[in-house]
Length: 279
Image (tube, rainbow, N blue to C red; front, top):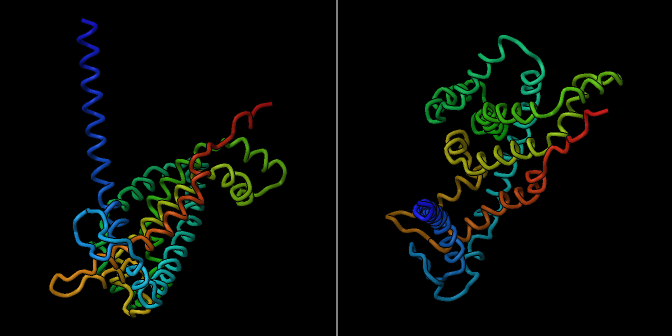
């Protein structure tokens, strides 16, 4: 009987491991194709060893109009949108976390409903509104919409992390004369560093890979971010410069990877609140 149970557990474990390996391979194959094709002079859709190692693909895309200007536009749009999202999410999550009201739950449910709205469903009225208020084809208008689209889920995340910070620490700061805003900036946010890092990375990544919003709201080619300019590698009649596309994808992914590396220590750390409210 014991051997039968052990064999069943082993079979289930093998099946689970096999499923995880298959899922990992499905995610890894596109990454492998990007890396190999970026240095392959004869790159195509197949995942194969390069016919020869070359940097010509990178030389072809490392031009101001192809890579540098779109990347700078992406950094401005996503950086500004992320900063605005994090600040507004912290200010909105603080009263939801610290003050009890019968309106808290309806407000949170409204936010949850807002996260389920597809952007494609609201782009037509947003476009018409931006035309009326003269924000169409402007970087600031696109930044505002980026922040507004990411804010609902950012508030949810920020509130959940903020709930983990003991209120007694704020009360001690209030006793010393700190205002609620000062306690938020000097006590709560430093202690929920991992939460702020999660919201920052999530918001930046979602904005960085967004094609539809800047494609609709920006009209001037010089203002287009990299997520839109990557479409230039898809030529007419199905002709695609696969090697250059892969090289551009490697460069395009670098800022997101660097951001994750910079905040990885904060993501992996705890809140370090042990013993903070004792004594």
